[in-house]
Amino acid sequence: MSSIDRPVRHAVILAHPDAHSFNAAIAQTYCDTVRDQGQEFVLRDLYRMGFDPVLREEEQPGAPGFHVSADVRAELEALEGSDIFTFIYPIWFGMPPAILKGYIDRVVGSGVTVSQIRKRHGQGLLSAAHLLCITTSGAPEAWLNEQGQVQALREISTRYLFRAFAMKSARTMHIGGIVEGLGKLFADRHLNDVREEARAVCARLYAERRGMAPLQTIGDGS
Image (tube, rainbow, N blue to C red; front, side, top):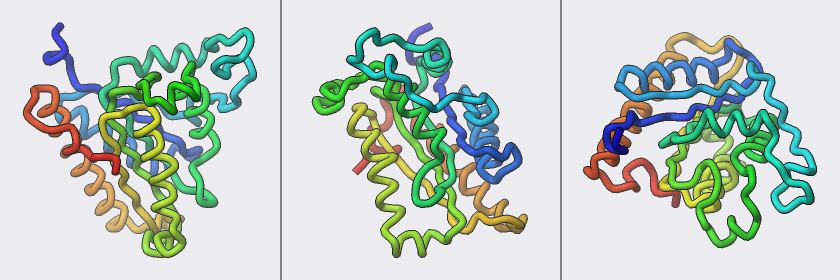
């Protein structure tokens, strides 16, 4: 099968301990939309997988006896060939969940050295792919903006990955005010926003595959 005929593939990484959380609903909505658009997805639900986020000494690039652990190798194989990586997670204490940071340490950064990152050689799982981060918070987005938190997260978890791994594009979507007892109308409205975002991403990836759209239409990472 030629690259143009290969289905567009989305890697969806969910990081929330509650299987019935709003974040889980976001992941389900995104995946359902991708399937409805005739594209493929692979969902990695880190908590349900029991993913171990602890980076070991021998897993550090350049370390004596460096090797890729079996669980990391399995992840790399599962995500191979993905056109876009969509990370879905809540903001806790101003940061992503620790399990997601461990996933980036062990899987996303597997075998990638500091020198390669500095020189932007495009090594690693994310190289030449697109990035979408969908985040949630209990605090309203306006309050987070006042603290400079949303901008800081974009710099750390989106733009850095975009630049360090020589990705094609990066885009963020944040939903604030996600608290216990969330109203159905409020939830449905934001899930519809996720659905529309997923449709737009699918359309742009499809067009890009056929040379009909510039890369920055998904997000320029600036």
